[in-house]
Length: 89
Image (cartoon, rainbow, N blue to C red; front, side, top):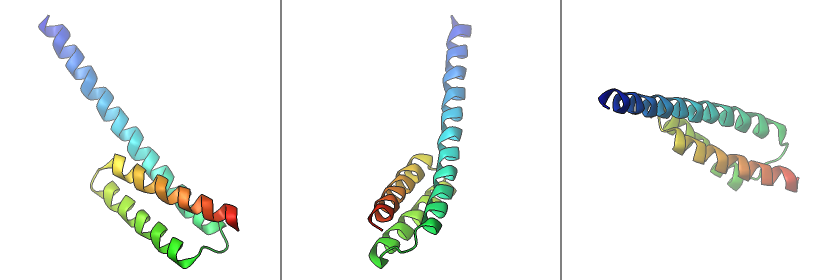
């Protein structure tokens, strides 16, 4: 029974680590998408540009701190704002 418990515990830890790596990889992808999308939109109004820049900085800080969930949250918010701006142009 102890071996089974130890095996299950180890499996859960390994899966958690893999999920964290996936989240951080997605964070990196979203940061790149953010750079690409920003470069592809000709005109971004200044208030929106400031909001997106602030979200990008927050995302990079979260990534540096190892907080993939916050990084994902910030990058998704910034991408949504830029996509909305791109549709209105």
